[in-house]
Image (cartoon, rainbow, N blue to C red; front, side, top):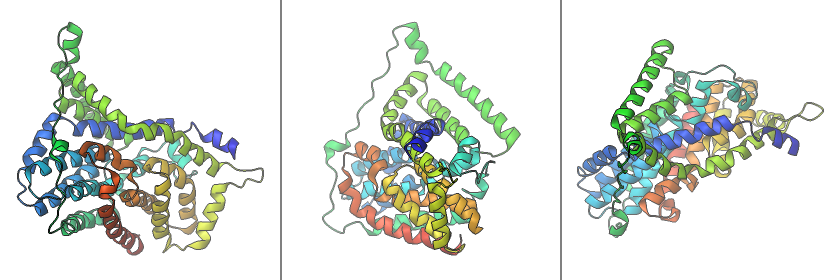
Length: 402
């Protein structure tokens, strides 16, 4: 097993870089001054604590569906803006509501599993134990009726649930000291090199090149999204919003602090994948044995629900969608194929299971909590209720529609 582990350890470096860039580019885009100003204006529309809770939930849901790094940051920034403008709003619930948007990330445009399937290539073949080799269109995953139904139910139910949890009295309001906005220092422009680094003309030229690249991509391939295309969209959108290469680089430098877990842990996830797929002298692998156990426990009707629930458990120990895909893909996809279950439904069940238990796995809440100045224990009670509601919704969808 150590040999299998070491053989797989370095096999997902490209995928790990893609996962890192998904977070970094989304985070950097959300920190653009123009976006922060618009969020501050939007916060001025809320008049009551209930309206503030609903608004922050919807903004976080939209943001995380577009890009999970983007959604985490704008949710936190918007929560702080609302706390400054709305009297009597419960700050821990406001922050928990911002984090609840993270429930939809794996069913959205930056979901690592559907985008990995849409990208194809040798990484996909390795992760799925050879079940999938060709790209799978996002129309079969992200824009399938099953996925859109789950997203719609969460968009409707979560804001109402969060609003209902607001205490009628005794709300814990924010400490004003935690709501002070730090002003970013402007770059120096004393030398020709510094002026070039902070040049809007140079930034626009790079954005124009990216625009031509993306236009050619969509003109020749249609609306085909893969990991690289999504990363490019967010990278150059962030550059456009920040205005200059120097200012965007500063935003990226801040965002990079949030990917330590991805950089450190992905080789270990790849090692686990190697242990799952490595075969002994008789041609039997651990992954094959576990796959056969899943086949014996379930039927074609119950397998999607079982895949979702098992993914929720695994996420507690592997708090990364891409890492979880590397660990569970070699097991669940062959089992689905053997049972005659749709591989796309199975993959999305793993994706939603990963997103589901993020409500009680605070790994990805840490960047948001660092912005708002709270700890995980401040929001976990609310997050547990969100976990129960979303678990019922998603389980029902996979049982009746999967």
